[in-house]
Structures are given as structure tokens and as C-alpha cells.
Length: 394
Image (tube, rainbow, N blue to C red; front, side, top):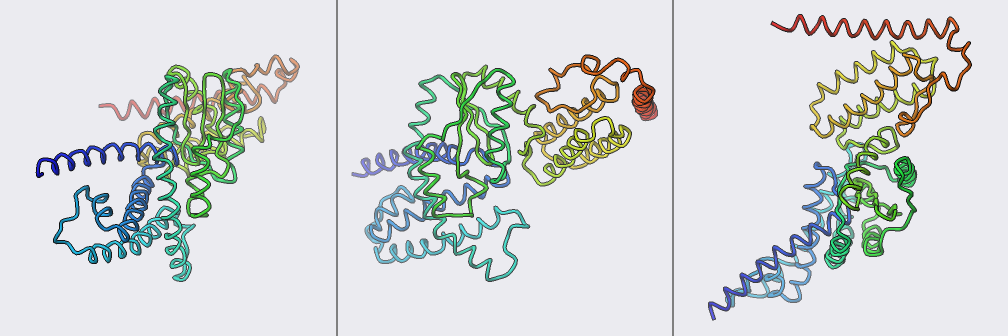
């Protein structure tokens, strides 16, 4: 008998590990890979919601509840009444904890300011917990099916960190579609599979605005014959053959640099991305009327702040690449290669100014002076940088 109990306990633990794996798949498929600062909160809320459902079950069936929570049978000397009381306490406390953590997931400016609003937000943890528990149970069933479908097609998935505001979601979908089109992928818009839509609708119905920055109301997949792209509010999932996925990812991180989406995920990095976006748009709007020396000074200040910001390397790399794109566009304007800032998708294919403007325009005094000043500024900056490096060397 003791051997049989030990064997059952071992099997239960193995089943627990399997469920943890499937649970991880379910969370990623539902929300995507969320930013690291929210991942811990989301994991606690997800496991808490499932524990709440088990505790609810334990009120009616104490032995079942304790077995599901600890994977051990309830000892005979433990009174079921005490177990029911403990489970009842858990069903009250866990949603309150979920409500508190839900507040922590909001940006500081979005959190309620007074005590009454804070208490109301915490009490929303009850429907939030119920909705998330039901959603994760459904996803625990659907996730293996979706995983098997991917394996059958011999596809791979890659995740691109991205932050999309709910009001900009469909516009960003269009920008992704346009970016893929520049590299030959003609995609069509489709609703995400019902195995993602149904759980999302359940969660949205019960949790309301508490999860609007985690799930999209109109979760959309872009489909081509050899590629699929699914956009979450905090993740971009690219699926396809390995080579296609790598090419699509490279294309998207370049083309979405100045879109409505953030490619960084911390507040400090978002602010630097806003400054680069603002400079890019101002250069694009004013074209040749833009003063290159001012732009270079602003770009230098952004570069200095980027080095001092101490953001994670992955975000630094994104911001450095965007800064390089702005700098390249600015130098092209200063050198007279183009008279306007093009979107990333058009930079490589843009025709030189000489093929679009009359010769006398390029030869006019204003055009010559503009190019001469630009070249002198670039030369001066290069000389200063060289002198700084020489003075710093032993």
C-alpha cells in the first residue's frame, strides 16, 4: 500500500510538471510575451486565479482541493471542516491579492488617487480572478492543440517585443501589413483562431478595463501562404519556416521604427523613442526648411541621454538602431542625395533628387549653400570627435 501511494504521488508530481508546461504555453498564447516588469505580476495573478478555483472546489470536496494544491492525499486525522474553512479564507483573500497586483500592473498615472477608487479597483479582483481562471482552463486545453498544429506544419515562432495602445491597434496592424508588403509578403487580415478569441472574450467580459493593455478586442492575424503574424498589445508573434521568420523579423524591426508602436517597453526607453519619433516627424514635415545643425544637436543630446539612461541592452540596441536611421536620413538630406525624409520602407528605394528635380534647382545658389553648410557641419563634427579621441588616448 505504501509503495502504491508513493507511485501515485510520483505520477502526480510528473503530471504537475506537465501541467506547468502547458500552463506556460497557455499564458504566452493568450497574452504573448509581456515586458519583464509585468511578467512577474502576471505569473502571480495567473497562478493565483487557478489556486482560487481549486480552493473553491476544495470547499465542497476538501480532499480533492488539498490533493490538487499539494499533490498529496488528505491525512485521515485532518478534520474536513478545518480544510473547508481554510479554503473559504483562500477564496476571499486571493481575489483581493489579485486586485492589488492588478493595480501594480497599471502605470502610476493610471492608478486611482483616492481611497474609495482604490478600494473599488481592488474589489474588481473578484471578477478578474474568475475570468482569468476560466480563461486559463480553456487555454490549457487549447494550447496543446495549437502547439501540435505548429509542429505539424514544421513552423517556428519568434517574438518581437512591442507595445501598442488599444486605440492604435488596428492602425499598427495596417503598418505591419504594409511593412511586410515591401519585402514581397502579401498578407490578408483574419480574426485570430476561435481558440484564442473565445478565452479572450471571456476574460474581457469579466475583467473589463483591468486587462485592456494585455489583450486586444479585435485580436488579428496577418496571413500569407508561408507566414503568419499575430499582434498582441505587448508582443508580435511571427510564425513560419525559420528562414522566412528571420527575414520577416528583420523587416519589421526596421520598418516599424517610427510607427505608432513602441519597440521598447520601459518608461525611460519609451521617452527616448518618443524624442526620436518627434525629431523624425519634424524632419519629414519641414523637409529642406529644416535646420541640419539643430537636428544634429538634438540627435547628439538623445545619444548622450541614451548612453546615460542605463536601459537594458536589448532596448539600447533598438534605440541605437532608430538613432542611426534618423542620422542616415539627415546626412542624406545634408548631402543633397534627397530633399525629404522617407519612411524606413522607402529609404532604400528612393530615387535621387536629380532624377526628380530640374537641373537648375540643384545648381541654384540656395541649394549649393545648403549642401556646403551641411558638409562643413559634418566635417567639423568629425574633426572634434577625432581630437577628443586623441586627447583621451595615453
